[in-house]
Image: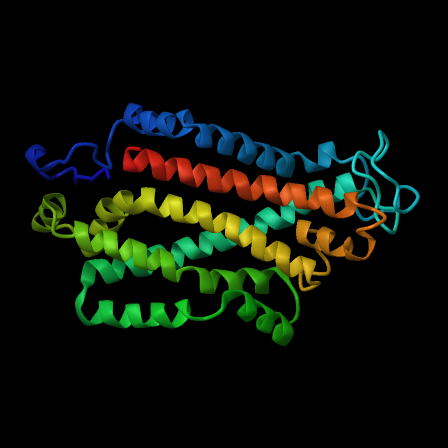
Length: 296
């Protein structure tokens, strides 16, 4: 794992591959990840998912909420993915549904990073009573059943993307916090951290400029896996009818297909395929990153 060295530390204390490493080294790390079969496949699938999300208005053939044809029409040139029970174009629905699903996954991932990395950095660096207190709080959140907690939150406060993001984000950070804490605990006594402290660097500087860059590879792997997990949880909520009724997502589309599985296979197949592509892409990228970091 690369170790960073403050600018004011002596050169002999700088480990190989610091956080201030040249751009060529970072490109080499990226090239190593992409050179793996799983990395290439993950990059293609993730890129395809992002492209569809960004270009949804240009690619959609109709308004996803408007009636554009007869109900339950099989896939054709006019409707590439068929129509649903109300006659709405499923292709347009899948394209716009990507925006909602990826928004939830991205927002939860960001919230998890802020909470998990922040708590893990502070607990691992400070140690002592503060570490014990933060770890007890982490364990309390870790034992909460995430999926059922989201269901309870929706039952109490109503369905909405903001509530789903908060409920998932506030229950997804404990594992990341423990991973970051363990890495920081092993790094805080290494020479480059001691050099920063002896040079008068503040605790915030050490955490932000020295320790955080060195735990980011592991954080990226964890967040890549979490991204796929959140997509599945959001899809499950939508499938059960617990998603935001005002937002179209892949899970909602799959849930609407429950009563038509025998007569309209496409209603469940195409949203399910979109979920599979997005989850597989993020997991393959995370796996390739983990493999490149471990030298496999």
